[in-house]
Length: 298
Image 1: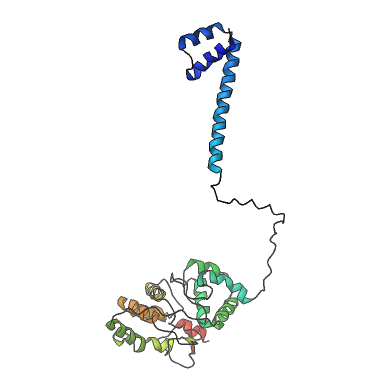
Image 2 (image 1 turned 90 degrees about the vertical axis):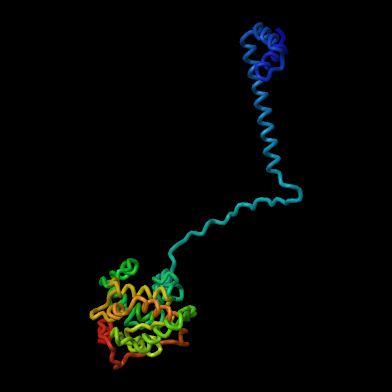
């Protein structure tokens, strides 16, 4: 039997290039070993053709379009990577307090989430007693409790004195959107209080300019309305407490709920005086006895 006839017969089994009757006769006349060899050759040629076609198509897709330049890859750098070793920093209070900026911000302003208040410029006695309250369980915000739970009184006083000395700019006031009646109510509470509710005026404790009184009474300006309202709510609900007698808790409970929102909005809208600093309590007699103030003045 001729080899060409056998190849035609095998090709018929793949693509049908010869009449079925002739292919069958040629295959029957060929020895088995020859059929296997020819079949393998034809299959190899077929597979090689498919592979060549795939490479051709892939090469066409990867070829850059006309007019588009192709940059040569940068040579590999031979510079050894720099190994990081210990970082040397000065052991100062400023360096230690960098950790506080994670929540309180680089300028220690009150943050937009209303949970992290301004620290810069507040009276040291006030800041100290807030940290003590976190440590001793009167305030329960978990991150602050974790930070101060093992601090000594001496170290917390150092921290408080550091932040008291910081002189940083205040944020601009919030827009005042209260109606005239609410504005008048806020002014009454701030300047005169409410005798019917046995509420003292804000200025009686926090100073005529609301800038606070050293050593233990904070200012009320330069804070977001959300923060002020949240503090009133915490005092009112007992989630935040001070040394007994807890004067701010008592004030918050005497306020009507609408008064809290009104006061918070009005205070947040007041401009902060230039170079505002806490005044000094001195011999001023407060309308309510406050445990934290008494402790700070001992």
